[in-house]
Image 1: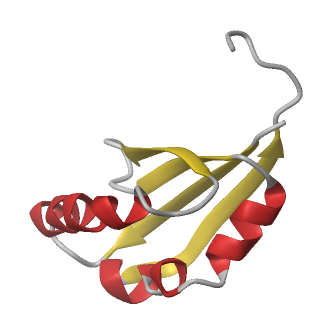
Image 2 (image 1 turned 90 degrees about the horizontal axis):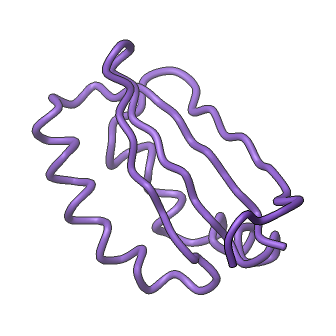
Length: 96
């Protein structure tokens, strides 16, 4: 079963710059092994930026965390405070 990872953080950058970076960096995510899908999010109430990652496996997620792309997130988005990451095992799928 897939793994779902959520990430949420605040950025020091203006919203337009965050949007530009998301679009620019998204092309690199298309090449990440084991990443089925990534949804980009913005919380309109808090201004936080987030993402939902759908991974083929926990191994794929853990391998990604060691890459430059993953490790550059804090600097790229000028993250303020802690980045919150939650991981879920998928237990059932509605549609295949």
